Length: 172
Image (cartoon, rainbow, N blue to C red; front, side):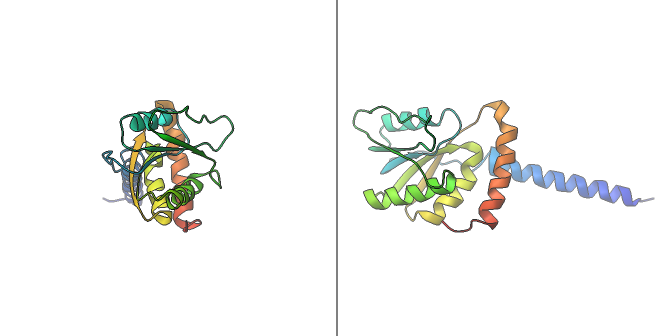
């Protein structure tokens, strides 16, 4: 004999499975791009490890320019790198949306047709959406995973930020 409670439990189980699958696909295991030579590397501020990754990519010769988002006073601007022009910028607003706008502005100013953007793993999907709305050139993304203890916060933040990007802030 079937009970209404059984259907509710099945529905909750299915909803949880869909939510967990979407979370994994969007924020934990997003699309991965393979780095290749571009006009500039652009690092979006955030979790530790991004600056080191961006500097490593620049030193490896992927681009002659490294642009680093430094939205807060404590964010470091890397020291000069041999053979690499370093540009540090403060996005407006101090968000991924502001960083996407600055990416497009810097690209227009410097003639960049391709960029390699360094973001946090959980931020990747939303950053792709934001950049696509602002920048018409080719954008590849390289991710840096947050510390293990930061994942719960990162995923919660990304769900809220994704909803905002898809509903309230639909433009560049």
